[in-house]
Amino acid sequence: MDVLISGAGIAGPALAYWLRHHGFTPTVVERTSRVRAGGSAMGFRGEALDVLDRMALLEQAHALNTHPGDAASAGRDGGPHTATPAMTFEYHLEILRGDLIGLLYEATRREVEYVLGDSIATLEQDADGVRVTFERGRPRRFDLVAGADGLHSRTRSQVFGPRERFVRHLGLYTAAFGLPSRRDLRGTGLLHSMPGKAADLLGARDDGEARAVLHFASGSLTYDRDDVAQHKRIVAERFAGEGGRIPHLLEEMSKAEDFFFDANAQVEMDRWSSGRVVLLGDAGYCAAPASGHGASQALIGAYILAGELAVAGGDHAVAFAAYERELRGLVAEHQQLGREGADRFFLGVPIREAPDTTAAHAVEASLARIVRLKNYVSSLTAT
Image 1 (tube, rainbow, N blue to C red):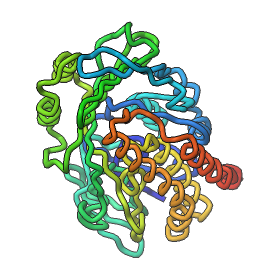
Image 2: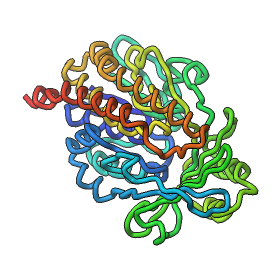
Image 3: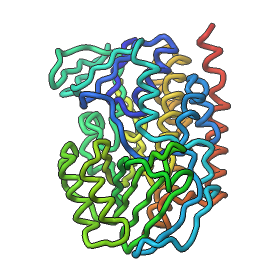
Image 4: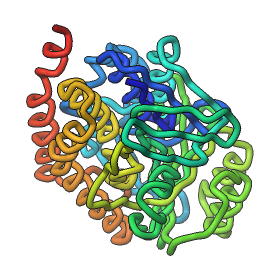
């Protein structure tokens, strides 16, 4: 079966990997001219690591571990006054988003067709497949289409309806970008809290690499999501007049080439599939960056979706129903954590702080249940 995947972030290449593993022929289309770099660090624990291990990527991911250490919390004058222990974050592995995307791309690009710099224009389903037209390329037919094109998914809008029906804004925006080498941040971080705003300086690796993550509270903003200069202006205006390290961070932000900016929002849908089209990751069930589990959710979802298609012999109706059934509980828990994370920000608690231990362990248990249920997939399809 030929499967078109829209989006070359985390969910798309992960799904392409597992589809190829199970004998399908995936094609990935990505509207940008290259796979994306930048973004903040993402934490993994429990069975999300098991999926990376099954992809033979865990060792490489550990080599890129940011090794987060204790974080000092600073006031408006920039002076540190309290410390947040690293154990608060409870991640067994933390890796930069761009690094993970790079690993997934390298693991798939030789056996998977990537169409960069193009996107889906129209989708027309019939009994035998999906006719797809592209913004630049020639029309093609596929057996199935998977929308893994993120919070602002065009696939979702084209098949399920307008964005406003499904996207719930949590009142928070996040920007992230790399910094010049900061030896003083090796193995540690600084958290600056201001009313309605926060800035995190994070030592990304032992070699002095560092990143800045800026958060600010706001109602829903209207902007061109492809206009990076506009995004930087929005952030600079929000943090204008702040003291301490903020002016220096804004200066570095203006020069950053790996800048990332997006809303903390959630996608809530009654169904993640319609006919031969299915949604994956943030496109179907974004939990918000404040949850700390979006990347884990994408990896687990890709593993389950491809496995269900393999077990069902390509019967998409059966496979899509099983995929939703297995993943719904996990998504509900992650979205609850996302809402709690955003709420903590408005209470003045650093956004990077992990959920309470009870909630975190509940999520890990859910991941363990899901992967235990799916351990049979590889052995079944191998025979």
